[in-house]
Length: 402
Ligand SMILES: Cc1ncc(COP(=O)(O)O)c(C=O)c1O
Image 1: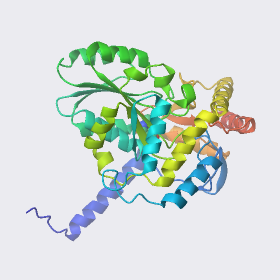
Image 2: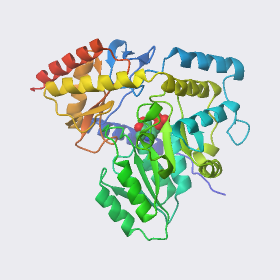
Image 3: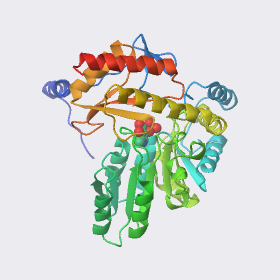
Image 4: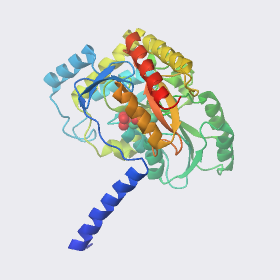
């Protein structure tokens, strides 16, 4: 039997001291975070901590999070199926709606099958730890999302982190890995903090040359890129060369949850091996009904993607005209790198005072020295929203000494 010794008063003091000290240290480094409160709906404008602001900090890229069709689908599912699913998928929580949603996703992605997870975070940790283990090698892009990093750690595989999109270092990693072990390359297709697209065809070529498997995270590309919003893999016609395609339902699709699309065997293996799929209550009916309605809309309303691209170009051109130097991104995610964490937060705060919410992003979400405003566009931003935002950027920049 294992005994846990009782706490005495000095232990309690010590733990309280430790928490306070940690918080103080975060504040000292300019890395302290606090929650902001949103009142009402998620749209191109937002009531944030009681202030009406323009929202340039949402992943609701197509504006579907409050679309009437999603609302109606959610309500109808509650009436018909109730609220909670009551159990995990492998017990009594596998409802017809889960399978209907999976069939929709597989059709959109052009894969044999798909499996729904409760979130993108859970999908990434669950898939990576199911597909790789001790003795295997995972090759992971340095800018991959925290959920991929955590999945790599959980798998206990040897992890080779290659510099962002550096195919030379990736190839060295593949060459150096023993021929007979399992190798898995994992990358986002549209990087969440930089908005740039991965050179996927080249990565797939390398994977095939060295006998590695490729897993992609299409969290930010789903609904936005490719035919019918199917993602970057579909855009490049690489569907049958990328066996593991993960994506989320809570960003452009405006609902919640995530998926992994691939072969029937992949689905079966994940049902059997993926702990974040097995040991959790399944998604409730309303969420699945909303995701199904969202997928129908990405087919039916291509004009949303066109409006989004139009807004991306307009904001990018406007910021460039104001003298801001922007990176490679041509997408709905526009990083404006400030560098220093505190300076970045000050810039974001001053924009907010002018009614524009563009979240400052600091380490550990991005590498030290690359703190940035992560400006995200939505299809539902109007010309007037963009005009007001650019004016605020101009004024804050002037206050910062150009
Ligand atoms: C690239 C990437 N993958 C996975 C996730 C996690 O997805 P979810 O929010 O559904 O947990 C995110 C979320 O921000 C992400 O940006």
